[in-house]
Amino acid sequence: MKKINNIFASILLLSVASLVMASDVNEDPLEREVLDIAAKLRCTVCQNQPVAESNSGLAKDMRNVIKEQLQKGKNEKEIMQYFVDRYGDYVLLAPPKSGNGVPLWIFPPVLLLLAILVAILIMKNRGERHTITPPAPLSEADQERIRRARKAMAESGENE
Amino acid sequence: MMRQVWWVIIPALVILFGLLGYGLTTNPKHIPSPLIGKPFPALQGKDLNGNDVTLRAEQGKPMIVNVWASWCAACQSEHNVFIRGARRYGDSISLVAINYKDELVNAKRWLNRLGDPYQWSFHDLSGRAGIELGVYGVPETFFVNKEGIIVAKISAPLTDKMFERGVSLMSEAE
Image (tube, rainbow over all chains, first blue to last red; front, top):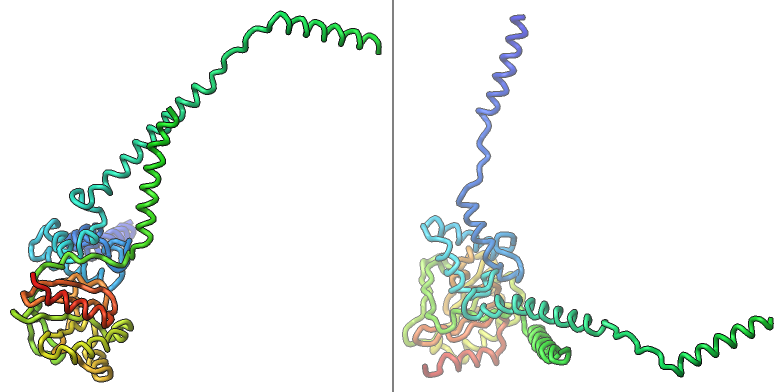
């Protein structure tokens, strides 16, 4: 019994030891911050890829610049401005909400509203077109023709 | 009612397709530089001989800064433009190079082989000076007037015509 206890205790100890000795897997918060900013910047040589995802030399350099500036205590806004001053608004993946960028933000919702409006008008119009006015009652002359035709049909049937 | 709707839809579509069509004719690689009209920044670093240098505009003298690298094929095609330009303008313009993300050995061999029209070359191994100047691809060329203001930035291999155009922009009265 004692032997089993010893084995059990050593297994327990070993499993705890691995936990104690394992190095913490931690993400450098600075690295995270660098990537968060880099995700909002366009890699200027790859046109549609954020700096955070690109492996191009320039994107790597830009990530280094972000890191350095964060270490110097600059905030996100200042760092974004640093790149805008050098590369223009183009470097921002989301266009600015003022100045030149305004039409880009306004146009899609306006287009959507316009599309909804047109759709409503078309549907309304279609509804009107499809209400069928009941035909006018047959005139006495028409009734007479029908009676004659029926009579003729009945007679020809009898002859066969 | 329907007719009125078309009066809205058709012009809207015409405008939309007009803009999209216009977009197709523009070059997505051409990015207007916000640096035009701004002073050329002072850049500290080393030259190709390992000396500490500061690249800055000299007061009273226009400057052309060419960003190149030995690994850049297009740079070779524009190199003779600078050789001819240096011969034509001599000392009246400072013609300086930024050697961008290049090995010293390769850069020096390149200049030995093709000729060195530059008064001196800034060695930007890390690409940091490039970022400071909003460089996104080589070759790029900056034209700086004698007040130290960037008047043009060309992000393409230069031709003689573009070189002359840049020079005339530099000497234009402000």
